[in-house]
Image (cartoon, rainbow, N blue to C red; front, side, top):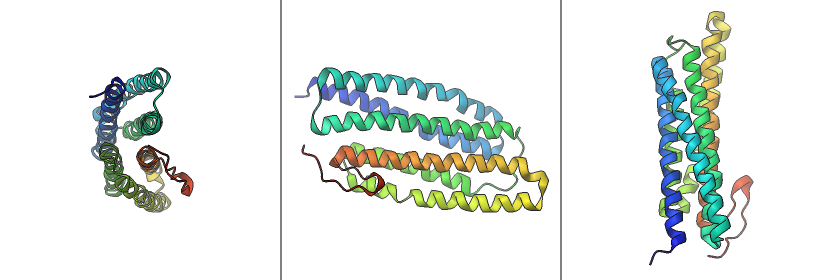
Length: 224
């Protein structure tokens, strides 16, 4: 028989999974707007961030209510506390997607100074990391979540590669400085999204195993 607590946790889980879908959509659309110089799409990304903000508040309130009224123990407590932190990560991912969209608007629909290959690749990697982390939560698969953490290095390397290429462009052609800086800002935002995606994977491991893997921590698991 499903308890009232289980029903409430499932409702929170449904909302946070909905929020993850919106965050991944915001990443994809923001980079698509940058790639195509689509100012209208960029504006839709910025407007859509309010829905992520609304969900963040609703999820926070629901998690706090569960903590206060149900006083969950063991893995249920870990799930609620993980969701509270993941909720913040997803909201920040939405904010960073708007940073990318704002750079599209700043470029006023002009084409990028170079064909975009690495930035879209970064966006795909970020979305994959988020998706895999949530699958790990759904399946209680810590190994899957651990597989996400190492992928952030690839995003960092792409970010540095973009920096090097664009600084070379700016050195060779001063007229490219402003649009190149917009791409650097977009790349930095995606690199930070990768960091938040890593956070989500770490929260997933904590929920599943009771192990804090941040900063190389390897404490033993808590009891169920």
